[in-house]
Image 1 (cartoon, rainbow, N blue to C red):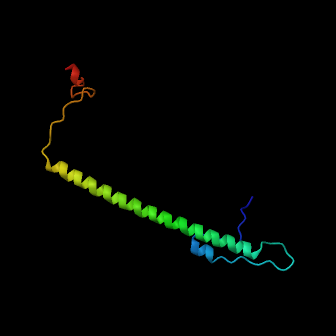
Image 2 (image 1 turned 45 degrees about the vertical axis):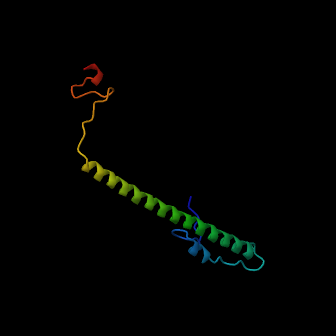
Image 3 (image 1 turned 60 degrees about the vertical axis):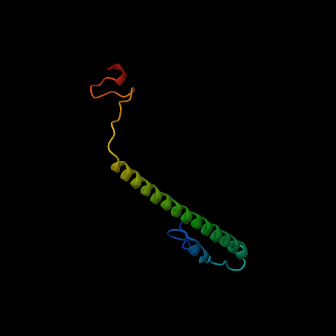
Length: 107
């Protein structure tokens, strides 16, 4: 079973600009089809909504990039601050085994 492919179908990513440029063929008189005004109204609505979603996605990606840069800068500051301090001895945790395999509380 094959897949129907219209010669008027948009190939590739669907963008508001591409959608607004779509012109559907008109039916000849006496044939069934859609009313041009209804199709145009739907296309205009789709163009607007797709444009809004694209704008929101771009804004979200920009915010995501800003947060990533801020996180990397903070991580670099923490690494630098940790490197500037003298290493401290970390006491064994009572729940963590020591080098000999026994728990610190049992030594």
